[in-house]
Image 1 (cartoon, one colour):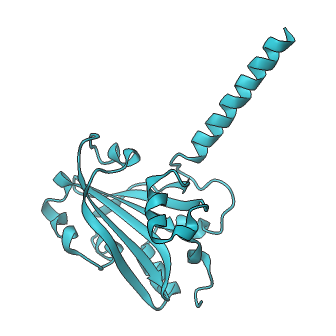
Image 2: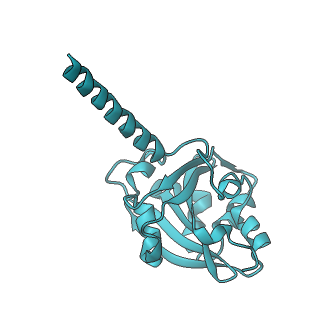
Amino acid sequence: MGVVAQNVSLATLTEMRQLKQSSERAWQRAVVGQTPFRSWLQERGSLTARLKKHYPAFSVELLAQAWRKPHVDEQAMLRLNAMSRAWVREVMLRGNGQPRVFAHSVIARQDLRGPWCRLRAIGRVPLGAALFANPKVTRGPLQFRKLYAQHPLHQAVCRYHPQLQQHPLWARRSLFRLHHHLLLVTEVFLPACVDHPHD
């Protein structure tokens, strides 16, 4: 009887650990735990505007833009099936020459028509400048999570900054709407984001 109870206890403990890991690695509606990135993660205004305020020498580095299959955890938010492709743009937001935020935007083919058709050609123009300048654009709730080495966005960052491979990275995402057109924007905060603004 003692062996059975011990096995049940171990199984319960294992299940609790799995649930905890699943919870830690899922997108959440709140920032869980202590982090120096909290104020950045919870910023409801334009992240571009805040970066410009902190870092006078602000720039956008265009890393990639192409038609791709969205990540699994992006497909449902954009109402896409597993075979659909979307327009994916990745940039690095730099402040005083240092990489501060990796930004990843995804828009489905059907949503790239109409008023958002010019998003394919914005190049190094900050996306936030276009979104927050349009009063018709609405923003959904922010979602947060820590990204670990297994997540494709963590891997994307490490293609450019391999020294971060062993570091969990905080990220947030939100869905922007213009009428019925959807745009998903994810921002990954690099360690330099919380450095002294005049480094």
